[in-house]
Length: 113
Length: 116
Image (cartoon, rainbow over the protein chains, first blue to last red):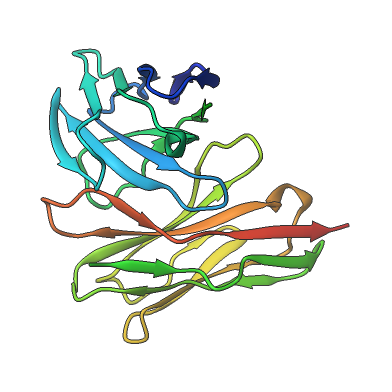
């Protein structure tokens, strides 16, 4: 099992810039979800992709967008960065099975200044 | 909308002792799944234990067990024989049983401190 890997581990961007975060899913997993975790809080669901299509979205504006590739790797893109986007961004992969938990990566710590 | 509440921001326990972390949730659904995740300083969320709402039997994974009270909407985690490696943030999470709803809804977490 390869697990979930995310890159980069840390990133500092300026307000108004755009950022792309990357995630490599666990081998055999066809579903990827992205979460945003502000300091001292639980994660918040951004969106989920299944077979390259977005099939679920949380309360995040359209400037948060994503992609899932045929090899099930994924990207989270954020445009027009705001200071409140500073957070740990977690990627999680799974099979499309309601009962299963997700396998998480170690996240990307994004700081917007 | 579903909510998850963890009322203990921080708990401490002596090594080798037992500790219970509390979690309550609110939902109108009858089919759902509950999870406990551990987040050590490495930041990776690690699944500790999961419970299907339709199962009355409480889930157990080695030193970790849950007390699932469906009517009371309570889902507590018991850690027996606490070890230094158990120190971490613990999050309770809810997932709907509906196929159209995939998101995990999380509590704010409980920081567990293990005293040697």
